[in-house]
Length: 233
Length: 288
Ligand SMILES: Nc1ncnc2c1ncn2[C@@H]1O[C@H](COP(=O)(O)OP(=O)(O)OP(=O)(O)O)[C@@H](O)[C@H]1O
Ligand SMILES: [Mg+2]
Image 1 (spheres, helix red, strand yellow):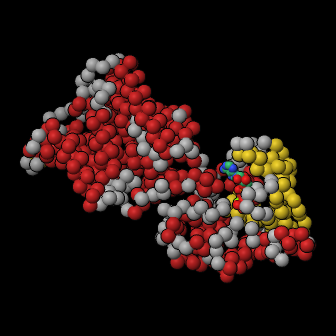
Image 2 (cartoon, rainbow over the protein chains, first blue to last red):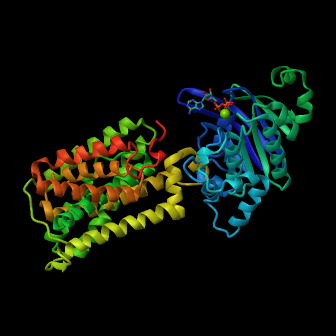
Image 3 (cartoon, rainbow over the protein chains, first blue to last red):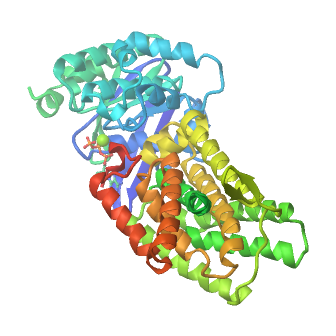
């Protein structure tokens, strides 16, 4: 459904993306891996239309997105759950979820919130609490829940395991899989390559703004180079 | 009692101006020093409608508010938008610069001679208990409370208000929700300018219309906003009322010259006891 081809992006003089090409097919989980500064978040921000590429093409379901605004991407169902969660600290949990549905005009917002609570019951208990006072793990749940409120067709997750205890990471990955099972395609950015390859169908590994390696996650996991560099084996 | 009541009228004006300051600060995280001068320009524009085009008060008032909205939007779109990601201090200096520019331009266009400015409503005082109210004073109080209530409700309970609060906290995350942050900010500037404009048109009948008319009001509005916690809309109005009354009492019982000194003494004392302001929760200690 989504296709990036030869994307180049700059921050001032910094050449952050040097020809990234990738594809996210309908209904799949694709992981985007790589070390610090490899260009993972930049790639998601290209997709969300927060930054404009210097070169390259970007298509969603066959149409170029390069003239769309960030808001239009949200309306197209391409929704990013950003790095470091970025929940609105002074809004309550409920308000954070409501603002996730900001662009929607349909009547199902209430029932979708119920849906979010089945994934993350803890959010329901803390509905009136200010998001800034939630624990890191709870904030991550809220950030994902907030993205779900926008009814994503393609969910872009930027390091959902960042700074979270291993048990909770496992739970969150289970929920990511469930969300995918209901038909939402997912582009998962992770430093935790092991877990990401476990649940994804296909993986891209970025290095210095380029795709250094790609392949079926199953195959990549057994690749010696990958094991040495990214899986710490 | 009469002194308290006339203090309340000034308090309403400070409160209105403070409301505009707080609204812009809450949403765009920026203190707008040019607020008072934008209000002054709006008041001059209304006076032009009144005196040169000989329109009625209501028409002039409404047209001036329309002007204020466009004025505020242009200042944001044309100037402040480009500074959105600049350091706060730079933004602040720019609003100070705008203060000077608007003041100078107004002097060039309308001259420096003070002119009389009509009240919103004429009519004899009405006696309530032992105090006298002029219909104009009742109008000033009514409009202040109404505007405060409207913006409080919008901010707290509507989708637009939610978008405003979200934009204030995290621009990038707001964009990812599909909020058009720049438009939200522009609208806030427009509304802030309207509130200032109302304050200006309420001030002019009392102080005469001239390019310096909003200096004191702006200082008092700042004081009111700080007293109210700088993030609370009702706080801004309550802060304004407290300052208006206090100032009037000092002017009457002690000396009119010292009212500014005593008013700031009061603010220092209040802030010493409650550093976050009367209505400021912990939220006023925002990110630095
Ligand atoms: N706003 C910015 N201004 C300047 N340079 C930036 C900016 N954002 C990212 N960069 C640079 O672009 C490169 C890619 O950054 P990006 O955030 O995409 O990496 P990442 O793969 O997400 O890293 P991490 O895993 O640490 O989040 C880095 O060299 C970074 O320094
Ligand atoms: Mg990143």
